[in-house]
Image (cartoon, rainbow, N blue to C red; front, top):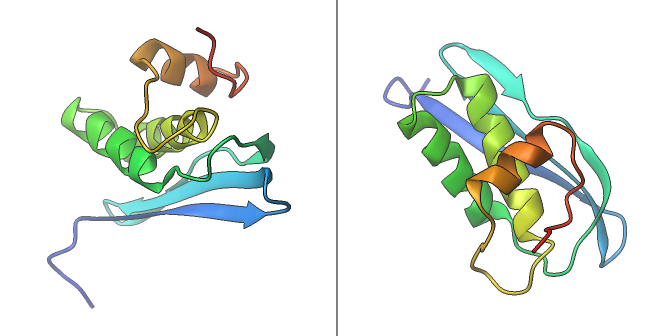
Length: 109
């Protein structure tokens, strides 16, 4: 239907309360869907995350990662951004990759 689109992605957020959300993401690329692990009851400090999801996704694609990895980078970066105040993510690539490997979504400084 839209032949010029190569990638379509979105976050999946379920707001349980103002400070707890379920957070995930999906991407359609290369003719198939890929889904990031759902983070249930994510304790959030600031309800942002969409832009950080997009920047993590774009980073991964520019770094040559697969669509499956790209959605995981994006979802992890978005989750971490929501645990810090403001719209600008101050997390590192190391912190994003640690979350992808199962560490908690709290930023350690």
